[in-house]
Image 1 (cartoon, helix red, strand yellow):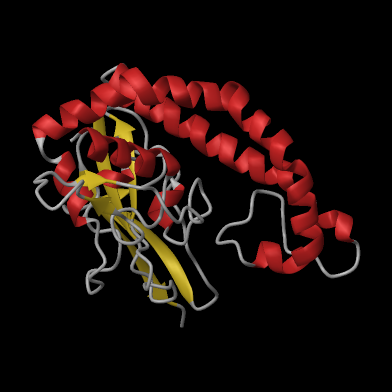
Image 2: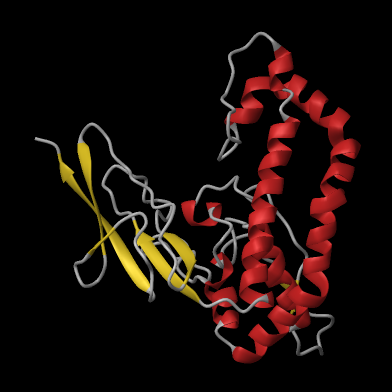
Length: 263
């Protein structure tokens, strides 16, 4: 369980959008070994906010505990890691490992480690930008705030390492703050599942978002998707009640967005 708790936390802290469905490896030591170990880690291009599935873009959510990370008809679901989290004994190992190992490492990474790595890769990042220019940004799932894919010409515009690093730092800072509340302070959270089945959204990737909200606190960050063809009507819970930005959350809930076709 030690290796699987480590793997679980690596996935959770990084916000890997392939969590539990792809590029997950495990092994046995030899043919006689009855234990299955997790590892090694692999394929972390879609992490820390640079994701193709919207639920993984929210660092203040325990995404590795969610089983359905793709649309219902998609067989790629996070079955193993979500099942492990539902096991009390595994959850105790997981939380203890965060408190005694991962939290200190995460603090060091935020205070000094990221800057240390930046210094090491700064020249390589500049050369990478010069070689791939606009394609380099076009390949990303999500661009850091304030960046857009520039036109060809001035290659100095592609030296965007600082913006990328800020994106990583912000994600990890928010993730640590959330996990500290959950596993260090023992805050009481409600889980709000927000379903966005709008006909104009690409449902090949799950458009559902999960929010962990402290009981009695307001709902914040609800998306509002609209197009010229579809007008957004708002969200309703299972009781048919309207739930909007700022609504006080006192229990677990499932919210479903509603749209109407214009004209």
